[in-house]
Image (cartoon, rainbow over all chains, first blue to last red):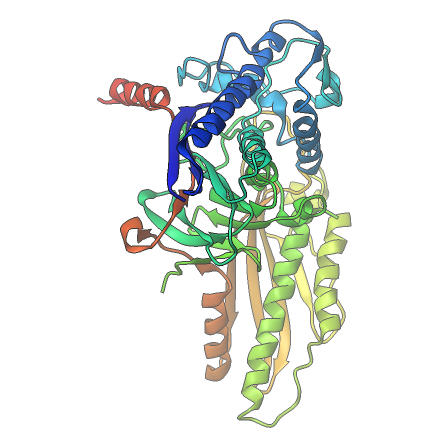
Length: 292
Length: 197
């Protein structure tokens, strides 16, 4: 892995590793495609930009034909919504924005209300979304993971078989089984430390913790029922075959048990609770530094 | 059944067999009666929790009003597991919500027969908003070998982790909270500055 391409997009830092054997021109061509694809995704789903489809949907009700890539993401959100009894919902956008996580990063909390039930507001058929009223959607729970999958598929479509796509610590890896990616699991209490190391081969790992995107009593994760950020869990890591699934489940595990989520999804997990106790699935690929 | 309670049941079920293992280890030095707890009994332990699932106390039930502990059905002998509510709901949320379980501390005690006699282990589970917020384990025995075994189990059932410096660990990547864009960091710093006295 000799080529390392780093850039900022969709509110985080990206790092794409590509094999050394590729010629530089080819790498530039692939990176150009990746940048355009990320821009396209952002333009559809970002609630942080004025020209996005999501922003338009927050202003007018009606029927919206989203890009074709919306269908798998909306279907997965519906699965998470059902499994978490409404705790993971794309309808959380307005509450997050009112909490202060808005397009201007005001971090000033206004009056907040719980999001309405999915079926009362939104009807989804594939990538077609019909809104009964204007609503601010947020795809922060699984959108980034999904975009990592889209970018990865783009790379694979170019015949590139080994790579790593890392967006702010959520990543997908492809490569030789004897060269696993050693991923440090950041200590949420001290970013210069890790509490363990995951070993990833041909899978995805996503992490979620509230230590960076935090203001006042809030983090970027909001319980739609309580309108507070969960504090009983410091961090969650999920390893899965798809980055979208891994990403979405890190949030879902804040609200539902692993057993419940496993009825629909295949994954390994590690949950760090506020007392620094760790709960992990037996087959989580990694080691943890236990207190002696 | 609700997954949260199932997890409690699994915890209870997980605790008792380890106590049995402790007893089995002790048999090496002391030829005595076999532990009376079987896998069936563990199943019963879970069944108690399942029963509770169906018979969860409603906020308006007499038990909740008077603060009287609501006793759950007791599983068959020789193992008995009793679950009782020892703490009334501590918080009254402002927003309407639908939780399946009343917040509070739930205690369960499991008993088993060891070569040294009857032993008991207790766990306490703190439920908050349908989530297991805390678990603690207590095992007391006048027998020193039993106590040693219980202590061994107590220290292992809940793994506590510590941080190691990133520089001391060979890593290719780090995963945790996502790196934030500069705009967010700037906003955060501005708030901190405003908030500073």
